[in-house]
Length: 348
Image (cartoon, rainbow, N blue to C red):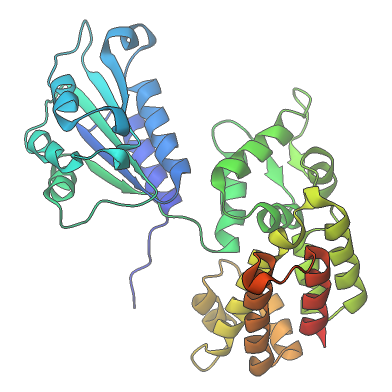
């Protein structure tokens, strides 16, 4: 059996748990396409590796575009001032022209320095000595983007429970938020914080679909999740009504909010058709990376309503509409008309 892949969230929790016990490594390389966790790890180190009164002389923050490897090494080799350690943070390290030169420092890091290298929107080549050595003397953290709706919902639930927030959210409300906002974790956290501050002190913190509509502005009846539900059930009236709402309410996101989520669903539906036999619930879950059995329900229902051939045609149409919405072939069809055209093609 293949080894289960550890998620970015799990790796993050392990890293924070270790630091909460006072275990700060001399070198951290934080890299990947998802900047949220990189910022969170860096924030924890800068807030907790030093006492507040130690930061003036022992916290150095620089940016990759403005600094050289030599300057970083000089800073890192200094001794702390009236403290047990110092922290040197390199933000936007991907902008450094001589990043690899830091391997000279990483080969023999100073024990009283915590060097934090934040490398966003990509990762350092695993073959580079900088990375291989950092894995030996310190910590290398890879922050990968969320790719499945189930992971977004899991993030929402974990975020609301963690760090003393003590909040819960209805499953339907979580799915609506996940479908509307997607995998932008920084924006998700910001929107959830907006909801949390609206609760009165001491009041139960349970987030419902009504609260989401009031505080975030996502309609509980007219949203990407309900649109997808209408397509799954081949409910033409509901699908066209929601499409009209999105066209008339630009803040809801319009065509550009609906396309990505709809594409992902039908792409997954196509994958479901290729599930190794026997294609039972557990096999479909494994094929699509679903976390809970009830999530299979929508795909099984859609498989009854859409053949594999039709699903492939829908994916093609989604690509076509996406291209036309961006002006390909100079077609100047309004987004609202494109959306209604897409709904008609899918349902008929």
